[in-house]
Length: 378
Ligand SMILES: NC(=O)c1ccc[n+]([C@@H]2O[C@H](COP(=O)([O-])OP(=O)(O)OC[C@H]3O[C@@H](n4cnc5c(N)ncnc54)[C@H](O)[C@@H]3O)[C@@H](O)[C@H]2O)c1
Image (tube, rainbow, N blue to C red; front, side, top):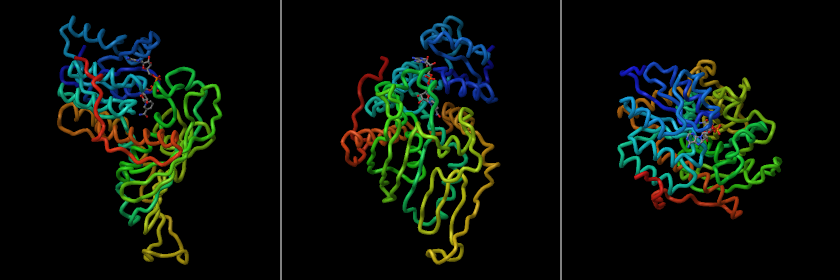
């Protein structure tokens, strides 16, 4: 039975991340899980476990609604493989269903722009799933950034090892043309966050890390980057999904149940400023007290800025979902817009081009890219 006062949400794609979104929908008192859509027969069991309907396609769900006099769900969370995001999202938009689209918004910028225009023509609102923007460690870091004075540089890493099964169960992850590779799947999160914290990136130089998984020659395992922001801030970043290391967002914050928390981890990001250094996720501020612009002659103090235990209790997926409900109602503008998604994608595009050219690449202005016509369902 459908509760009329609850916002109906359908989850599209029930692999690794879809059921997690669906679980959050089930737990949220203001919305209801309408069903899950996934062509894989194995996901019927996932629907059963979530006590919801299973549909093998969007079309099947629409036929079900029409046949039973049901309204279409108000919102959909798109959790399908990267290369399908635009097609799936456009089909949902054609029925006026608002969208939370997992990152990356698309594989190419023209496609993302076409989706943005098409969704607008259908009065459909889109939130892009860079959910880490809702992570309290990041929000605290942003709130405290002014304490380090003028930001000069940043050092960051997203380094760990994914298990072999990760590649075996979802072959789309093993080819760049279907959106595989750690740069598009994971680095995009960090570059989105760095832009969220420090403003737009202007220029990137990247070199690929040596490959170890020779059985998957078509996807990268990571890269080393130098980054320049428009503000003049410089940064270095290492991304690898094939090293033994806890220095990554998931291990440091414990926000992903798949990756065990590495308690007490310090400094997967270090932001260096004229008056201090801010370390994330530990949220320690290194400074010199009264010696505002002290030198190496003065001692450095390590000051914890927040109680990590308290900060860690908040759940970014819940916050993102609550925000999505506000976006659906029209009472909030998307916290992460299609333009933000495009901007993050442009960073990855620049990383890829830099690797190919062996040279630094300036980021294009998203305004200069023309949309492709393919996103429209009409
Ligand atoms: N925000 C995050 O932290 C996070 C984490 C993991 C994955 N993701 C993103 O979520 C998306 C899904 O990733 P995943 O790891 O869950 O992938 P997955 O391969 O585990 O699952 C994808 C599912 O989509 C289904 N599918 C394929 N085409 C479909 C279609 N046309 N309609 C409906 N279902 C379809 C597949 O059968 C599969 O069950 C990707 O875009 C990925 O980048 C985001």
